[in-house]
Each structure stands twice: as C-alpha cells, then as structure tokens.
Image (cartoon, rainbow, N blue to C red):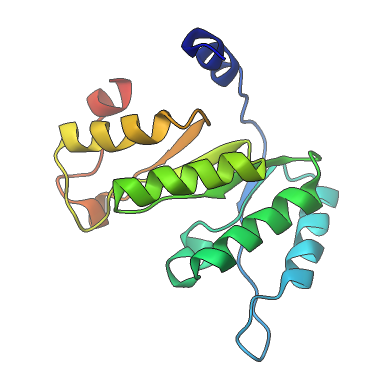
Length: 163
C-alpha cells in the first residue's frame, strides 16, 4: 500500500478503555507458562479489558529469549482472536533490534507495537527521533514508551514526539 494509505490506516487506530501490561507467568521449572497466559487473556477479556500488552517490562521482556518473546506475543494474539487489541512489546535500545521486533509484532498480528527510547544509550532528541523514524517504517502503529530515568536527558520531549 502507498504511504498515504498507511498513514490514513494508522491514524484511525483508537485506543480507549482499560489496557493491561500482562505479566509473563512461569512454571516451577522456570519455563514460560503458556497455558496460564491463555487463561489470563480470557480472564482480562471477560472483565472488559480493551487491550493486552504482552512483553513489556512488566512481562519480563528483558529476560525472555527471542523465541520466548515471539511465542508469548503469538499466544496472546491467537488467544485474543481480535476480541481486544494487542500491543506487542517490541522495544530495544538497539534500533535494528527494535525494527525487527516491530516487524515481528506486525507479522504476528498485533494492533500496535510498544517501543521504548533506547535505554542506557542516552540518545539526543534527534537520536530519539531517528530511532522511532526507523521503527515507523515497519508500518505498524507505535506506542512510545518514555522512561526518563533510564534514557537520560529527561526522556523524550514533546518537540521530539511532534516531529
């Protein structure tokens, strides 16, 4: 599709209601408990949750393997089955990894990708813009995750967001 079609499609996304950053449950054997994830998705949907965010920092994303992250997000997307929005956690302090994660979230069927400012790298505002501009080329709506205490320089300014 053309850039104007993508922009029009992405601008129509509505986020409203209660969204949950889903915890990633583990078994006693320290394995991801995918059955419990499915149970949590059903419970949240039954309770009226508008959207579920797997693999944010609440969901242990920094400690999951790439395969576990992909499988957790796929499990949520498949179980939600369009009954609520899914915002896939796909951030990284490495722009190339953030782009790959956004592509993975798009390919898995997420409605949105959560992408964080490159933490610990302390980029300039122009660097933040370039990071998210690269992620935006994937063509999935982005929820910006601003953590000033981890990103230096007071985080992302409103000017950088508007840009």
